[in-house]
Length: 145
Image (tube, rainbow, N blue to C red):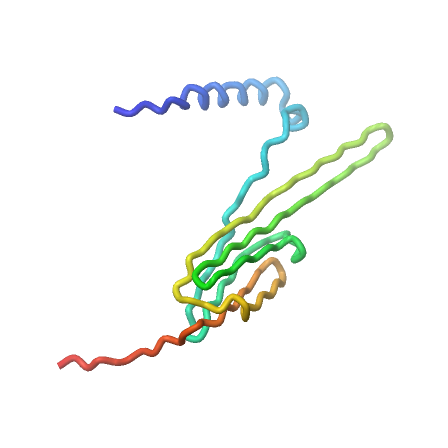
């Protein structure tokens, strides 16, 4: 039987979180240190139309200037960052919050493409990439005898 060597640490972390929650309630968020940015894998669709590969990726809240796309003949890599800063002032009270998220996804493409002729558009949180194929596949019907 395999025993997870880190289970004890996770159990301790859960107990400490419960203790902080009971003692501090909502104030807990402002007193604990910031966590490392979360890397998310966005939802994506890959469609082979015969002449090209179309990739649609959901990147909500991202500015198009913060999207990086790298393509080769056989793969596609997408990385996007979301940075937010919020400030609230009331009398002597100032509250500042910052958040940072990263979307990252890599794909092996179902066919070879020409990355130099790829086109990308971004609208309403949806990135669409069109990659023309190097060789168009020709289908042949085979009659069953």
